[in-house]
Image (tube, rainbow, N blue to C red; front, side):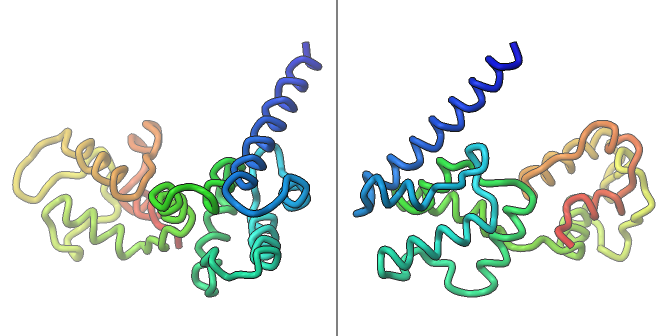
Length: 191
């Protein structure tokens, strides 16, 4: 049974790798051998930051152009931070270079999301609760967050939904019931 699981994982990885190779090959001037040479060390169907940087540099040199963007240090810093949190699927990696402009822009936005500071999160929470930042008590439990103008004891759920839309992630139920606004600020902050 264990060998079947391993074979399935290997087959999935190979398929992802093959798909990524085909996407790059069909949408660029690279031959299959050139693309395979570029994608030689795919990590389980994912691309880590060092490999991402290496392959971007290789593609630039082989294509003899600098059209893949990521030309300055700040852009690379964003990508490195994102790819330390989670690897990029190989298909998205290929699409980053080869897809239509809208898809490429969505992937770029995911990879290069600017840093979210604690100050920004705190200001957002204060705005959600219709309070001044100085009036936001960070020791308040998350499930006790109340807006300044009315006493709705379930309003914290609305605030958390707004936070999820704004920051792209949501804490689990245990976190919500036990932690404070200070913890929530740290949860959403990249600092």
